[in-house]
Structure formats: C-alpha cells, structure tokens
Amino acid sequence: MDWHSNLAKRASRWTGRASCFALAVLIVLAWLVTGPLFGFSDTWQLVINTGTTIVTFLMVFLIQNTQNRDTEAIQIKLDELIRTTHRAQNALLDLEELDQAELDRLRDEYEALARRAREHGEQRRKHGRPSRP
Image (cartoon, rainbow, N blue to C red):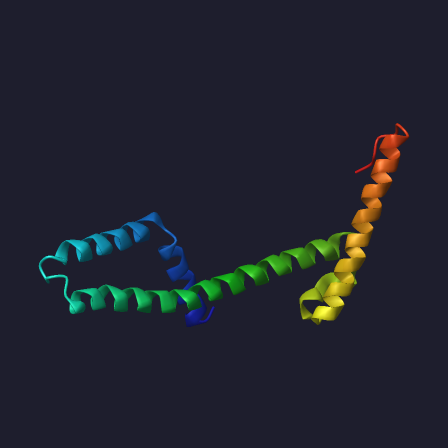
C-alpha cells in the first residue's frame, strides 16, 4: 500500500472515532472560552475560520479517497458474486466502464424485467397460486 493510501486509511479511521469528535468539540469550546480574553477580535475569529477551512479542505480529499476505496472494494465483491452465480450474466462485470447511454439502456431492460416479474406475481396471486421467489 502506498504512503498516501496508508495515511488516508489511518486518518479516516481516526477522524471517524468518538475521541476525534470530542477533540473537535473541545477545540471549539476552548475557542469560545478565549473569546472574552481576546475581546472577540477579528484575529480571534480568524483563528477558528482558518482552522476549520483547512480541516474541511483536507477532509474533502480524505473522504473522496475513502469513498473511492470503498466503492472499488464493493465493486470487486459484486463482480465476484456475479462471476460465481451460474445464472448471472458475466457481461455485467464491468458495467462501471460503460457510457451513460448504455447504462440507461441496461437499467431500462432490468426495470422491464422487474415489472414483468411483479405482474407475473400478481397474476399468480389472482389465480390462487403462491408466487415463487
């Protein structure tokens, strides 16, 4: 694992913990308490504004890195499920690589399949036969 992924993984784990949230709350409380000491000056306000802006800026990239890793892991797991399911279409393994028009066409196809399955289930119920899963 490269240094960036390793750092991002550790940082995302740490920032997701209650202790990190508690630290953030303590920093804000400390900033509030020091307000009267600094006369609620522009510099006092600039400290929290700059700090939160920097943290927010860095967190955007951290969250994106975490999201990318999670999405890739989920995609690999789904690909493996598709691959090992005998009735699955292995052509679906790399859907994320298709353009939007092709994805829309496939979505329409699967929505039509779902609609037919629901209609079939309703017909079976009307005729007193239990629907199959």
